[in-house]
Length: 330
Image (cartoon, rainbow, N blue to C red; front, side, top):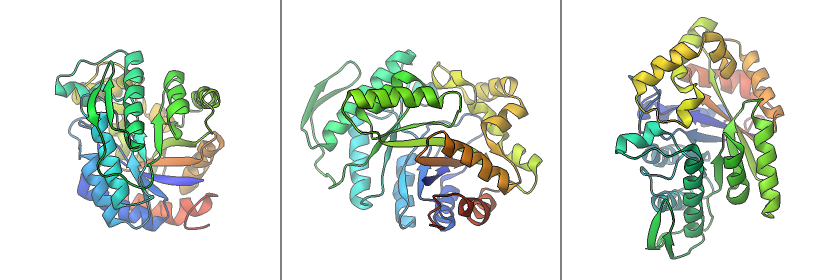
């Protein structure tokens, strides 16, 4: 079992997140996965550039796995540029980078005056982009004429010895099947109602394609503070990211999104969706529940707005050592 530290670019400025990454490695996390956004889910918020930050995080840490949770091919990022970026990261930090890839949200694409497609087209575009990335990683000089992307003899002139693993984000069975056909693993939220269906679709598609099952990355979010009320208040902005329609429909105004989330999501709903508690034992218990859903990696995004650095210290001292796969305790 591995435990990734989730660095929230929406909530914290990049220089603070860099210090968090250093502290997370010291605390015993195995990797760092940062969000990749143009806009936060609320205003005011943050939106440091994930790729720039990953280069700094790789230099500032010694052995953490490094990647995004997650990067979408689309108007913002042509898949050729994604392939180039991750090939470069792998050359600089061999054996450490991974690419988390997803279908994206209107929040990050519509500000570029892009037309936001239907949910099925979003998944289709992701798979097309994934094919291009994989073929470039394999050294192909690629001329591609797809529905969503084109290339003209694109090639990676700087290539690493290792192809960075690709973990495909999925919220539905269609995307989970893409992960089975083309990814090195599945990345999804640790929702006990959805995970079994997604794992079934992922495993069936991998089997049909004659591919082995890869990594199962289940993501959860946590907020710790010295008391429960402070832990809740520190995570309250994340009501702006809870409504499911934000991940598929054309929502791209952060202020309106937070107002909608505040109306739709109660405090109790937020406590159920996230690990919000002053008691480290509750964090341990909830993480063990995530492990029980079939995870091989648990990605834990730190949404502790009260004091993210104190939360990392608590995880290093009182949470990670009590989990079976803790790097510091194994």
